[in-house]
Image (cartoon, rainbow, N blue to C red):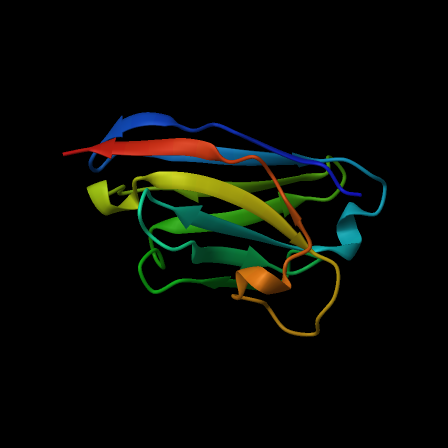
Length: 125
């Protein structure tokens, strides 16, 4: 199994920035597409961003496009989410996820195979 551990969450004022990181175990990290999802209390889990195995392709939810940037460093087995211009509606637990297959960038959470424990992001107004 792939172990994923998120870090970097915290409290930030609206308009501020945070950078989330996800550390993955294993020597086959580059074989996985990676994604970020988020879930607020009482809400459904929603897609945030995804990145291809080589990092050459990315895709974002409309709600974060232009504000968030996903990246990966396969040499370090990490994937990051740079979050700028944060809004209160960005408040959620953010999860890192790994997808072992597929030919296209995946936005459906059910098609991801491994998940981290989540890290809390709170944006104050």
